[in-house]
Image 1 (cartoon, rainbow, N blue to C red):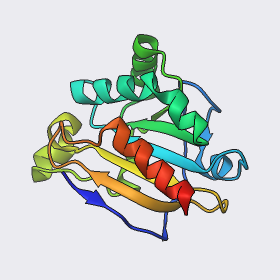
Image 2 (tube, one colour; image 1 turned 120 degrees about the vertical axis):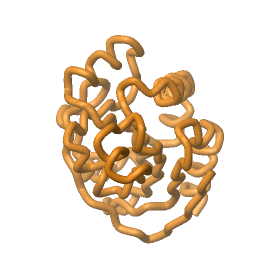
Image 3 (tube, helix red, strand yellow; image 1 turned 135 degrees about the horizontal axis):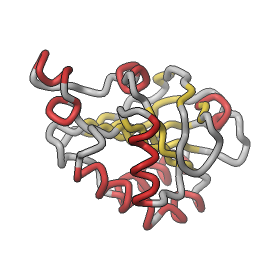
Length: 172
């Protein structure tokens, strides 16, 4: 488990296709400019086939109303083409954004770790590790408030931990 607080770290803007709830394409700067949104929770997934990733989005979906009550939006970033992301959405009917990042440009820009060198970079399911990032967008400029970098496929924050991070951000 790896918890990292990196206050005041600016983040790259991005725009990705969204196959679930919310605007398509999903633009971080547009969401950050929404006065009704205080936080964005980004979930960087490993792969379409990752069972732990599927479990995580379902767990977040079950409690999404708690995120919404805190003026937080969630976006899951899947390193897959749009058609694969649509299959996930058809299976889970997520109440938050599900973004397709087929070239892993956004995942890489946010430093999603990859293990096992060349092999890991060739096969996301083998090498890509999960990351959860909470962004403070109250100023209109997204700033990293919390990052959790998984060291193993199942290593990811609990839903309660993510909600606590959003609450802490709002308490500032």
